[in-house]
Structure formats: C-alpha cells, structure tokens
Image (cartoon, rainbow over all chains, first blue to last red; front, side):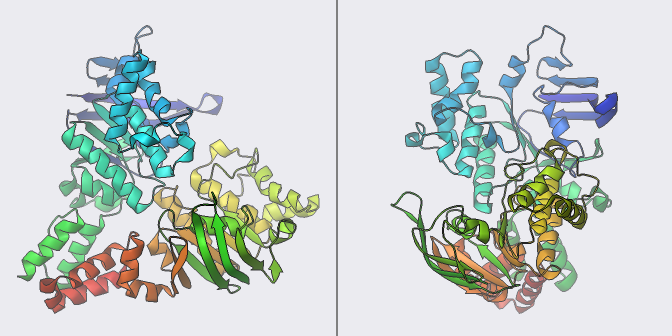
Length: 281
Length: 269
C-alpha cells in the first residue's frame, strides 16, 4: 500500500476562528501502480484532500499513512522524506519557476534534498529528457519559452526528485487541446514505463475516461463514489454527482436510443470508431 | 467599425507573427478568431488595443487611424480581457479595480461611484466591492474585469482566451456573460479562443494559421469544410470529428442509418 487515509478531516481556520471543514471522514486506500482520478465540483475538497498526500496539509482529525510515515507528524519529524516519495504538481505550476535557466530550475528540488551539484544536474538532465525538453533549451531562461513548455519545466522539477507517486492538480488547465494531450500522454507514459503511481485531480471527464482506471468523486468534502470508471458512468445516481459524462459514453447512449446499437462502455475515440466498424459488418 | 489593412507584426524582426492581415469588423457583430498556439491570434488582439505596434499596416477604429499618439482616444472604444485573471487585477479591492480604468479616463468621482454600482450589479457581484483579489475565484475575477470594461462603456470588447483558465462552471458562466455583451448590450465582440464549441455560436469565424487568414466565414461554413478543420488541428467538437472520420471510412460510409445518426448527433452538440 502506498497511501492510506483513515477517518481524515481537515478544517481551515477562517476569520474570527471560525472553522470550515473542507474534508470530512475520508477513508481511502491507494496502492502502488494505480492511476486514480479525483473529481468533484469546485469547493468539493479535491485539492485539500490531495495536499495531504505529500504532507502539505496535515489532518485535523484522523491519520494519513504515506509509506512508512504517519500524519499528523510529531514535532521533530521531517517532511522532506515524504516529499521525496510523493511529488505534488500544483495548478499552474509554471508560476513557481524562478531560476535564471531552465536547468537550474529543474535542479532546485534535488539540490534542496542535499544532492551535490553534479548529482542534481544528472537528475535534472534525466527529468528534462523524460518530459521531452531538448538539451539546447536547458540554458535558456524559463521565462522565454511557451506556456506549455514552462509547464514541462515545472513538472521536470518534480520528476528530478524521483518520486514514486505523482499527485497532479489540474495539470491540463489553461493548455490548448494539443498541449493537454501531450501532457497527459506524458503522465501516462510515466505511469506505464516508469511505474509511477498517478493521482490526477481533474474536471475534465473526457481526460479521466481516457486515462484513469479508478475514480474517486468528492462532494462537499466527502467521498461519494470510489470505484472503476465503468461503474461510475453506469451509476443510477450519477446525476447527483453533478459531473458531465464523457463524450464517448454520450454518443454510445445516443446511438443506442436512435438506431439501437447495443450500448457499450467505451472511453476513447478510437475505441468508439472500432466498435462502430464491428457492428456495421 | 474596425478596419484592419495589410497588418504585419514581428517580435524579433526575423519571424513574422502576422503576415499581412486585412479584415473589416462591423459594429454590433460577434467575430470569433480561432487558430492553434502560435497562429498569431493573441498578437492580433494586442495590436487592436495598441499594446504593441505593427511593423507595417494600419488599424482604424471607428474611422480613427491608430497611432502611438491617440492610444488614450482609441482605448475609450476598445477594451480587452485577458486569459489570466490574476495578471489583470490591479486594484487592492474589487471597487478599486473597477475604478482604475475610470480614473484613467478622468471620470468625475460621483459619476464613477454610480458606474461602479451599476455594473457590479450587472455581473452579479454586488456585495463583493470590498473583497480583495485572493478572496475571489478565477471566474469572479473575470467578472470584475468585465464590469470594469462595461463601466468604461467601450463599444468594442476583445476577450483573449478569457475562460481557458477557469473551471467548467466558471467557463460556462463567463461565456454566457460574454455572449450577453453582444446580444443585450450590443457591443462589438471579438473572442479569441481555441474552443470551437464556443466559436460555433459567433456570427463569424476567422481562422488564423501561421500569421495568415486561412478562412473567414460563418461557423456553418467553417464546420462544413473538413479540410480547414484538419489544417487548423484544433479540438473539433467530438460529434463532428466522429462523423468526419466515419465518412472517410469506406465501410462505415455505406451504413446510411449510422451516418445519419452521427450527423444528427454532431448537429446537436
């Protein structure tokens, strides 16, 4: 097991000490090698929940177990070892770039974990290669490249720390369709070829349908669904989750109602096309 | 009325971002400008508000030739809302943010307060006047930007990917507002987007590719023309993409019942 939430609640302290409970009694178990999507409306607690996964937040009640570590931590325990195993990519991570060159920016994380310049550079070069940044770019300023490339630099900075788990908070927001697809394909490759466990927070049901296998749905701070994507989209009370259906499922329903093609749970454009060919034979 | 004549722009004197664009935009119309990253669409937006200066060519706004000397005049007519709500919020509070543009226009204070009051209601954010930017969602910040633009009473409004950083609810909410500016307030609207579903609702779609106008016509004309859609490599609405792909498949094409259903579906979405 990689991460486990046991009866976890978290409250933000508002003005005049008012408590606002963002997540309530969360129980969740994540195994190594999974690709999980977390979805739910704005304000449902998605970001709060995943920020516990690398100890950015510590529970107000309950416990989070991350490999051999336990949250909340005791006073003298260090957060570093957790962050090394779980990398969190924030929304719009490119806003956190700050170094003079792309290479230095990617090296920042590993150096922070005490690696020498040489070692950090080696990790950075490896990470740059993983995200598809060409070497001639590395001496450029991170502020002189396109938005999509800046996001790759920020992601490389996380990968350079070689985490086992990647937590991605809306990694495609603000990118154009081509850029989104490239970034998602990259994460999928890291999942398949480099055995990274992926936890993806997203609003985009088409992306979720295409890439994730398990989906966790949050509503008002609580988990209202946890299961396979196949089960999610055929849930009777699906509408109560306020989520859109992926377009592949929508068109399958439409073709079933209009011309009686048997409904099938399909999640990619290619699969729909192949299925239509099969039934047209 | 906007008249663009043979407009060129280069960021580095070597590569041209715009390569001789000519375009007339009538009052009260909604034009969607689409194209993928690097096609020149944001460059065009920046030129239209005078944030950058063309290397060649002319822009006329309401029969006024834009020059470096009359920008404050021009900006009384043209307003712009950008992609990132955080980069354009300049006030310490919502009230100050809306006031900023009006102060630049030297609007007298009593009138200014009246305008702020009026337009904060239009965007449904009364009660937020003293809020600071960090207390607002992305969609709320974009609404404030729209209120500011409305208060300045510009007749031409440009939205440069104004919803692409918002969540789906924020996107829908702001898209609806943008459309209302045209239908209800009769503003000339220019929306720059890679969201073809949204562009489909405009009066006119201008497709930019590599600094040139590749196509200019009604949304129906653009969507009927699959070669353009392929060329621009944008995210074609799913239903249409499925129809187009099926149409190219010899076997599927013969299945009339299926092709009809797919066509109906593509119109629905």
